[in-house]
Image (spheres, rainbow, N blue to C red):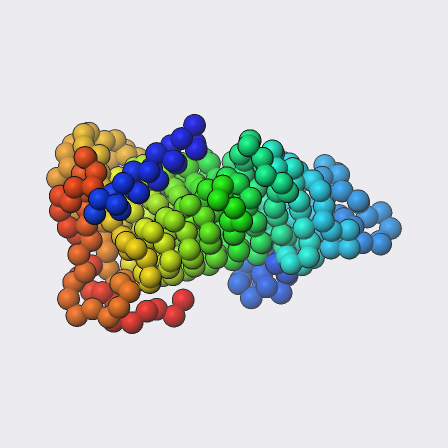
Length: 339
C-alpha cells in the first residue's frame, strides 16, 4: 500500500512537471550517545566478545552499549533492536551490516536507541521490497552512518516523535531505490545534515507536525523533498537541492516555512498544491481553499541565480497541471548559502 501511495504521488508530480561514523565524527557534530550501563563487544579478539551483533543485543539491558569492531565485518545479519541501547560501530566505512534483501536490516522498536558508525545495506535485488532501517518508536538518534539502498527505502519512520536522523550518507544504487527517508505520521522529528542522492524521492513525509528539515544535501534525485498528506508547522531550511526533476513540491501543507534553501540546477525548483474540500488537520479545521492557500511562507531562498525581483512559485488545484495561483518568495537570496 505504501508503495502504491508513493507511486501515485510521484506520478502526479511527474504529470504536473510535463504539463507545466566514528566517535570523533559524532563528537564533532555534537551528537553523543547516552550511556549509563555496561559495554558489550562484538568481533575483535577480546575475551567474551560476541560473534553476532544480535546475540549481544539480546543479552543487553536498557542503557547498555553494544560496540561492534570491524575485524569480523561484514556482519550478515538482520537486527531487531528492542532495547534502549547504544549500537555503535568502530568505523562507518568498514563496519558493515549486510542484511537479507527480503527483510528489514535494522528494525528499531524501542525508544531511546542510538545507532552510529555503520555501513548498512541489503545484499542482492529482491522483488519483495523493504527498508534498510525501520523505526517505530520515539527519541531515537540515527547519526553518522552510510546507508546503501538496492531497492525501496533507506530509512522508514512511522508514528515516531523526537527522532533525529543526522549526518548520514544515504545512497540509492539501483533504479528500484525509491526513497531515501520516508516518514509517516509523527511530531517533532529532526532531519538534518544528511547527504541523500540517487533516489526517486529524497525525503517524503506526510501527516507531520513540527518537523525540522535543515542542512541536508540532496543530489540527483528525481524528486528531492515531498512534504505531503496534511502536514503542518514544518520548517524546511538551509538545504542544498540540486540536479532534481522537482526540488520541493508541497501538497496539502499548512503553516509552512520554506526558507533559505539553495535551489540549483533543478528542472523545476518548487511548487505547491491542494485538494479541495474540508480538512481536519491536527485539530485545525479548514473549510475551503481560501483558508489554506496562503499558509506556506517562502523566504530568502536562492533560486538558481541572483534575483532582483520576487520569485513566483506556481500552485495547482485539481485537475493538476493547471496553474491557479502564485505564491512569492519576496526576498530571494542574491547568492547561494554556504551550507
